[in-house]
Image 1: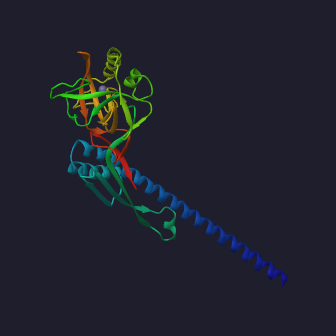
Image 2: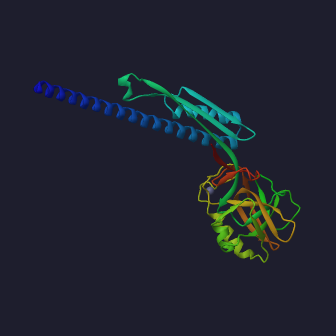
Image 3: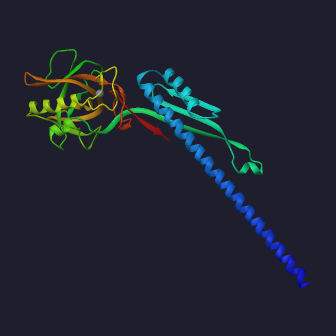
Length: 301
Ligand SMILES: [Zn+2]
């Protein structure tokens, strides 16, 4: 009796070990497949975002239909086995929504009968105006004077000329004027911020710094309004403002991108030649800023 009992005990111990091992294997298979599934979803989301970013760039430079066309083609090239694709662009709010779906084949769970499932990811991004930047230059543009086009002259003198856009030299309260012209303000400057307009301007110093900025474009041929490198150091970011009612204070309402193509000092005034660029830039984008051609991408939840 005792012998049979021992044999039975050994058998059930073995059975328990086998069952435990099987459960561990199944759990490992499930968690591995869950891990792979999560990775596949993450990759799908990453691809959708990359497509939306490129699409946003096209939306800035072209129109809704071209952006949609591009994003559809690009999605198919980027993602294998894509079996669901919806691309939507709301022109007015500049909102892009992409839904991508594809089958996900189980790697281990297929041995216990699960073959595949469908994964689906939706992302939404919006092109908004830049409302906060680092590296802004101390030339503020009056918002009622701005003309977003090429062959513009920025000047701190008001003159009756159709190409002239009036600017004010601003005091960032930090760093000296030459450093702020050469490298831009090191701190963030944002919409709503109030700054003072500068008086006692040292034009010789300003011109020396500006010449350097213009000569920083090392691209061949040199960057122009119609063809430029986005990383070009001759592109500067300028605050746009509206005048406050009293004294020399201004309030920032947005930002504009400007390609510097020339600079001169005459009649005790500053004249900067160049073009406003309407494009996607680095910076914090929000609904607070007004539209002066500088866009940034915001991922919507
Ligand atoms: Zn350049």
